[in-house]
Amino acid sequence: MTTPSLVALDMEGVLLEEVWLAIAAHTGIEKLRLTTRDVSDYDELMRMRLDILDSHRLTLADLQAVIAKSVKPLPGAVDFLNWIRRRLPVVILSDIFMEFVQPVVHLMEYPTILGNSLTVDPDSGMITKYHIRQRDGKRKAVQALRDIGYTVFAAGDSYNDLTMIKEADAGALFRAPEHIASAHPDIRTCSEYSELKNLIQSSLRLPLAA
Image (cartoon, rainbow, N blue to C red; front, side, top):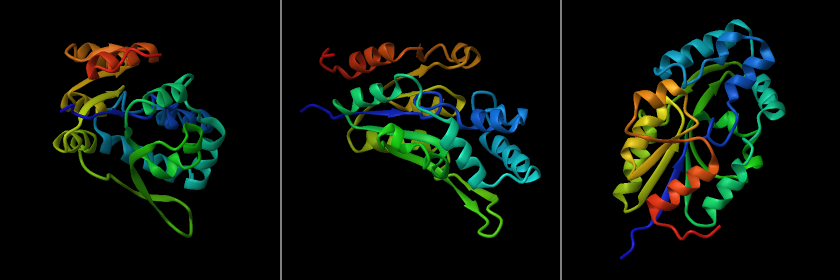
């Protein structure tokens, strides 16, 4: 019996432009340029972000307007995603907040996304809390998919993708910063969608069709 296969992907930096970089560029707040590529402790990063948003009185609606205007899928990302969808199930495992995805998910043709969520004050529109769906959720999602019989290929670009890549049957770092890639020489790396396609095909033994 052939084991079914599935691809699990990070979103920002792999398929979508970085949301916080767009917000930083729009607002001119340099510290908002820090992402999970730079800071390994996600809670530390989010506490800093929420403090900055509060001090500048930036609401969720403000951020969604920036995202709708400025954030796009990376060049070639939608074609790559559709290439996978013609062959295999694909799920996006992301730390992105679903409230941030709403303005742009249609540009990616509505993939399945498992992300996090926000609490917003109904009067002020300010973000008051962030909610992590599950701690180490990317790894645990891959583990659960394997537990129900899937062979999983996982790819991401940041610190918070490492455990899911290592949990998967096969995987790769995609366009990861050098300091992350060099610290994890056991994980394969690539920088083009064509390379990632080849890794998926070879790892999951897919037909070599275009």
